[in-house]
Image (cartoon, rainbow over all chains, first blue to last red):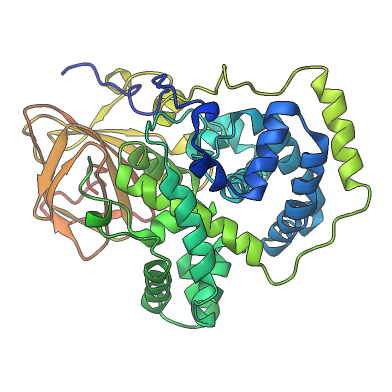
Length: 215
Length: 215
C-alpha cells in the first residue's frame, strides 16, 4: 500500500441504528429519568423537561467549574453546557450513553474549549475540542447498541459508595480538579505508584477495567 | 485490533480532560481503532458523571441564570443552530484534519539513515515535542535511550523491537529505562506519532543529534 490512508478510521459509515420506536418495552424501561427528559428536549424542544435538566445538572456543572479553577467563569460554563445540550439533544441516543454520562462529556469539553480559547490554541491547531474528545454517539459508527453502557453506569453508581475514602479522593482530584496522577502524588505527598494502585483498585472494584475475556 | 494499549491511568486522564492536546490526539487515534479501550473509555466517562454527581458541595446557581439561557436560545433558534440527526457532525481523523494532507506529502527531513522526521510541535502550544517519524521498510533506527517519557502511536505499517511488535493503532510508552533499536516490518514504511516530554539520549555511536524515531 503506497498511499497512506488517514481518513478511514473515524468517519461515519452510515450504519443506521434501530429507530427508537422499535425498542422493546424492556429496553424502554431501562432508560433513566434524565435520558427521557433529554429525549423530550431533542424530539419536542420541551422546555419543561429542559428546565428539570437544568435544575438537576446546573448546580453540578457549576461545582465542577469551581473545583477546577474556573470559579470566575462557573456560570458561564453552566450556560455554555446547557446551550450545547439544547443544540445537541436531537443527536442524543440513550443507547450510546446515559444522560448524565453524555452531559459529563459535554461539560468536560466545554471546559477544555474555554481554556483553549484563552490560549487561542484551537485556531492554531485547526482542530476542535470534539475532534480530540468525542461526545458519545456523535458521528460514532459503532453499530453495537450498547445496553451494557447503561448497565455499566448503574453498576458504577451503585458500587461507588463502597469505595474507601482514599480512593475517592484520588479519583476526585483527577476528575474534578483536573490534576494528573503525578500532581496528585506530589500534592498528597505519596509516591506515584501508590496513587496509581489506588486508582487501579477503585477501577477494579467498579469493574471499569474489564479483563479481556469479559468483553 | 490493537494489542498495545494505553494504561488505565492515562485513559482516565484522557476521560477527565486532563491530558495535553498532543497526548489526547494519541489516545483518540488509538481509541478510534480499539474497541477494548472504547469500552473502557465509556465506563470512565460514566465514572466522571458519577464523580460530578457525588461532589461534596453542590453550588447554587443564580436565580436568573435559566432565564438568560432561554433568552440566548430564543435568539439563536432563529438562526437555526440546532443540530439534526440527519446531519450528524462527520469527523475526519483528527491528525489528517490537522495536517491537511496525507503523510507521504509532508516535508520529511531525512535523519540517520533509515529514519525521516517531521516536527509538528508548532501545531500545539503545550511545550511538548510532537513529531512524526518514518522508518523505511525493513529499516532500522539507531539504538537509543530516552531521558524523558515518550508516547508513540503507530499510524501505519509496523515495527518491532525487543519489547514486541507494534502495529497500526498500537500505543507504547517508553522512558529512560528502555534502550532499543526499532526495525520496520512488513515490507512497508512505518509511520509513527510521538509525544516527547524530554529529549532523547543516543546510546550508540551517533551522539550528535536527537533522532525522533527514537521513541
